[in-house]
Amino acid sequence: NTAIVRPKGYTVSWHYNPSVENHHFGQTHPMKPWRLTLTKSLVLSYGMDNAMDSYVSRAATKEELAEFHKEEYVDFLSVATPQNIYEMYPELATGAFGYSSHIFGVGDDCPIFDGLFAFCSTYTGASIDAARKLCTKQSDIAINWSGGLHHAKKAEASGFCYVNDIVLAILQLLRYHPRVLYIDIDVHHGDGVEQAFWSTDRVMCVSFHKYDKEVFFPGTGPLESTGPIHPENPGKHYTINVPLNDGIDDESYDYLFRSVIDPAIKVFQPSAIVLQCGADSLGHDRLGCFNLNIRGHGACVSFVKSYSIPLLVVGGGGYTPRNVARAWAHETSILIGADRTLDPALPEHTPNREAFRKEGFTLFPNLGGWRRENLNSRADIEKIIRHVKDQLTEIRG
Ligand code: VJV
Ligand code: CA
Ligand code: ZN
Image (cartoon, rainbow, N blue to C red):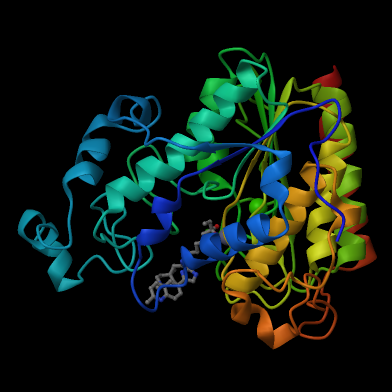
């Protein structure tokens, strides 16, 4: 295994605080911080930390969180505990509000657990730090695998997300960058980020996701949803949604991704890009329904990197922890320009190596092809590309 060395000509920084691993949503909740432990295991065992500036990130302050979130909501997150939550809100105990309560979105998807605020402020601090490294040009690429929690709203937790670290990071980037492109390859729609920047032409949001209004969370993000409809609103046309059906494979995803992202970059000319790499778009994900392989997912990262525009890379969803770790380790190698030197056989000394036994200790198991049929026809894909290109001509003017 060739030694991993620093990339020539650009700087990559890795922002992480292992204390996020100590927090748990609940024994059977699908969101497992263990995936971050496994990601770190692989990044370190391949020696990829040698090629990056590593920063132990600090917690974001309440003031920083309030740059996007409502103060009352930040206060709530900072005081709520499993012990006091039912005293504060007895209605929660009756379950009368169901999964998405009116009490700041708390419920089955977004439980109040011990250390919740420390968890949220830590993953968010890493995204804010990463964005600032890009602003000061100390980094060309900054990575926070613990971030990417794209569903959180101004005053509401949603879909396992409490604080929207992506929105807060983009707000940092906007201090120095005229235009930021946001790309979201998580299997879910990036609704929280879309909503936050719905009315501005300084942020273009592009999300690829499974879309089934009635059935699949969060039920938003149809092709036609492209920004505010009022002609005088600057955000009009600056949202791109790519709704997909089950089972999309590497080949069609790669073709679609390039066909959407290349014209988006050429027309919008972003000075910074934020890429959310939710790994629930991989085949065999516990919550996802696509058929992507590690290499297919990574091809998106590679393609975005090829434009050499300052890049913030965040994690997101991903519910089969060992595959999340494989994807994000592979993507780290792409970002440091070392993908050809990673041995597919996981190093013998990898901590927690047993977790990868099922697929035979390889970085690239076969996750595609056979679990679900690809229900995205060539015509569906071409229709999306046509729609996006037509939309972009509206921006070019
Ligand atoms: O589909 C939903 C909402 C429900 C109500 C709540 N039940 C538990 C599930 C159905 C309608 N929520 C989604 C949220 C997905 C969030 C994805 C986040 C990201 O990847 O985009 C970014 C980090 C959903 N799908 C599956 C579950 N919730 C789910 C939640 C659980 C669970 C099993 C499945 C919560 C607790 C427990 N099991 C014990
Ligand atoms: Ca998405
Ligand atoms: Zn997701």
